[in-house]
Length: 358
Image (cartoon, rainbow, N blue to C red; front, side, top):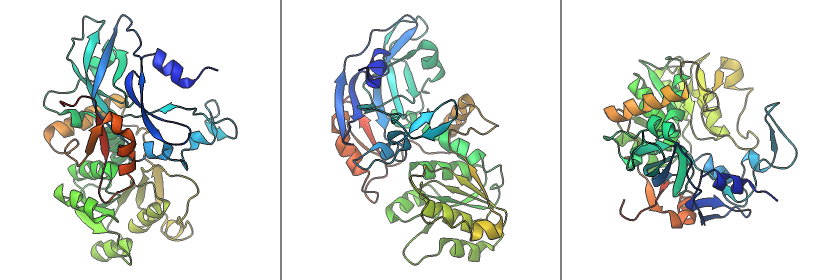
């Protein structure tokens, strides 16, 4: 039987040491033989890749919740339906990476050319020469910055765009001090908002404060919405971004904004919606909830312009990417990296290195 992984390897999308999830939900590092290069292609050796603490963790563990593992995606109808799951094992994944060209079949791209992108956690990947040129990693940005230019940064730029500028010049709220929340908050602040970052984990809120953001700890017994509305009034907060993937937090985002306020749903919500009470403030305050996830690109952007914007902000030093705390381990220790993400008070995010010298 033909496996999806066989086609992925044959196309050169993965090669060498590669992180994968097997049917038990366990993470392992497996070695695949790199495919030959075709004319017009380049081979990139990954220097850094980083784990998505949202999407990728939904594939992890024996109780993995990602819908692709449990239902079949009907592309024609754009519906999930019962049937054979759309993902088979071993499953290779990842979308945060940077690296350098180590082999080229194009006169336009030299060996040593630095690139960023959204390829998998793999030692070698193949791409067209044009893609390598389009995704050139600027010399003034680090490998660790580069992992967020291809997709994570654009996710956050796109999310802020769905604020429609209503946040500029006033208070706004970001729920979640994970990587997505911290980057989103910085972008919103760059557009003139007074941003409050909300989280339960005190250590993550310290990271937010170090970035110059204000914080509210969602500690036991603290009513976040009431705390902020007592400070700014019931009509004070126009926009909130929900970046945790928790439907409890989505409900709190609905509570915190003003009447007819805007909530941008950025998180990846799993399973049934516990804690989301649509008969409460959503109903009585007429709250607008929009999907600001990357599958829904804002009309003012394209993938290229999203990447241009996050690169511009990173180069200006307005948004910190690679300097956010990240536990980086050898790719062979992939299982340890995923396990570390279950300790949110200790670890904000994890990544892999593919060469001991980098």
